[in-house]
Length: 192
Image (tube, rainbow, N blue to C red; front, side, top):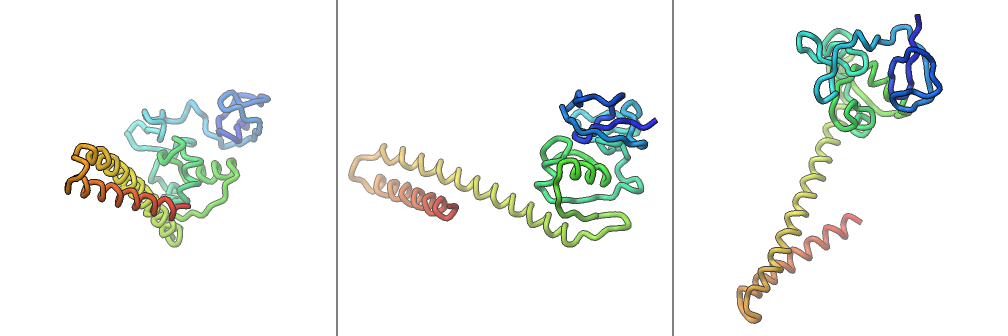
């Protein structure tokens, strides 16, 4: 018998409801090869992968064992992955078929490439993914530096108040606080 599948969350349903009980989706399809939920291995504690009896991970949606033929590493753009990942962040394990299904259901078009298997061709997607990862790391580093600079400026401004009005220590501390303030202003102006 053909199973009814929610096109939003891919839940296999017993009958065709008006609304999916899991996600509230209203678009349904059928698939003769939809996985039987009872036959799938259980999810791990994070909900990011299925765990087979031997401990080997599998696809969250269909249970296919990672590394089996037909489950090569497919890499897609970071933003697209975050939108479809099982944990709705950077985590989770999906086979290429389920990645494509989730992308289609979400209406997302993006670039991707296989990093293993017979269709292995990591360029240019691997290069794109590396550049995205470097850019995200650089943004995080800049944000941390700005936060450290703001903290240093605030501490210097408080410290300047500890010295007598006319002293070399107060002048030097005030000068450092002014330099930090100017550096923050230049950064914020460049970001606009």
